[in-house]
Amino acid sequence: MAAEMKCVGVVGGGQMGSGIAQLAAMNGLDVWLMDADQDALSRATAAISSSVNRFVSKGLLSKEVGEDAMRRLRLTSNLEDLRSADIIVEAIVESEDVKKKLFKDLDAIAKSSAILASNTSSISITRLASATQRPTQVIGMHFMNPPPVMKLVEIIRGADTSEETFLATKSLAERFGKTTVCSQDYAGFIVNRILMPMINEAFHTLYTGVATKEDIDSGMRHGTNHPMGPLELADLIGLDVCLSIMRVLQEGLGDSKYAPCPLLVQYVDAGRLGRKRGLGVYDYR
Ligand code: CAA
Ligand code: NAD
Image: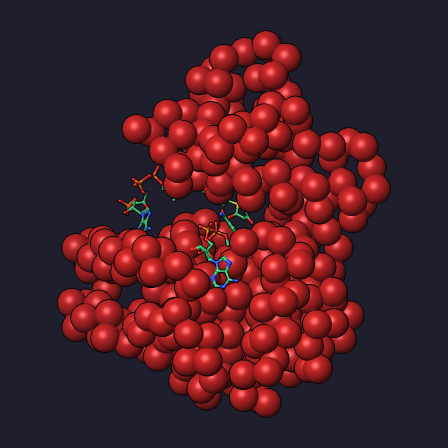
């Protein structure tokens, strides 16, 4: 199934979409990467080129495959260019309304056999599928950040996702060298259901003055062998993304324990979105 796939479309060229496009290109697929913002496409090209070079310089990828990957990558700001794709993976902003509109548009332009996948961190796949006429071909394909490095892809079945769509998506993730886990369609799925409350609790720990940001992160890095502390990780993910996920958990699971920490809300209100803006919990400028 995935072996028959030749072309992957990716919508959203931010940190996740660029990494997903890179994975597809490095694994011999033709790629169309679409973003509404030209500057995002320029940043995506630079990020992909630098990451491919890291793999080549470490001997994890041959120079030829690296060059081939860059040739396979086509960038566009026109969604219609994705009409030849066998699967389209959406990685735009974490907003249900914006994603639903995109799924409706994708349904209209994608070929009838194409799978429409979402890299959403938390939003209902069933509800995204309801914006299309092909709910059996809609699925969650949730990569972890940074996609070229992290081993996991979480696969989420919507209420109507077919077995064929599930198997084709799983097999594509395996072609990318990823381990997969399968989740039912409930807010936050597996990874963010567990990870985000921990990150939110780290914000509460900072907010209530229990410890400094450095000690919170050092405590979790050295005390639990996490590669990054929870506040550094929130800056990597994007504080806006963390806040959106907490709101989906709170609404979808109906428990006040998922209420976002006021400090997280305030940082996002102030535009402190993390590494991508140069300022989050930490200052990267
Ligand atoms: N492309 C290629 N290689 C990369 C890379 C990239 N974009 N980013 C890192 N690497 C490689 C480096 O070359 C290096 O390889 P070696 O060990 O072979 O030298 C290795 O990864 C480590 O990189 P760095 O030395 O640069 O270390 P780092 O601290 O900057 O970060 C990290 C690497 C992979 C991000 C690591 O810190 C980590 O695993 N952090 C936790 C990440 C995590 O938890 N992600 C999941 C977030 S949750 C999520 O994604 C779901 C959601 O919906 C929000
Ligand atoms: P990002 O802000 O880095 O990138 C989003 C990109 O989408 C931007 O370049 C923006 O210009 C583009 N975009 C927005 N609306 C668009 C539209 N309608 N059409 C075309 N392009 C559009 O975001 P990100 O961190 O890459 O997250 C993208 C998705 O992946 C979200 O759903 C997020 O929840 C999910 N996700 C994020 C992470 C993470 O760690 N950041 C991890 C896993 C999943």
